[in-house]
Image (cartoon, rainbow, N blue to C red; front, side):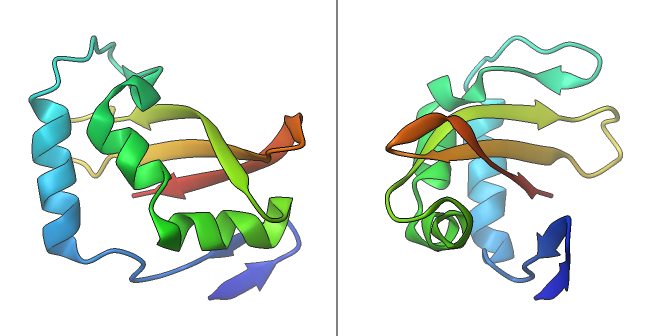
Length: 105
């Protein structure tokens, strides 16, 4: 982990094979896409499961406290040849008005 006052980077949270299966399942989900990606992707089961994965929940809990709640996710994918970024926002169960943002990509 590398820290800066504004962000943290956690490497190797997920195995590449896990991410391949997530990418494949998401591709088959039929979410509407714009040039930049897809919004409201927490409606897709595989993304909800990823957002609720204990590894991400532990990271989110460090910032928002126990019981983080994923409440928004957006997929940014501007080019078929580039990596995409899944942006997930979490808040504490007590205060959904503020929270943290995690990006996977």
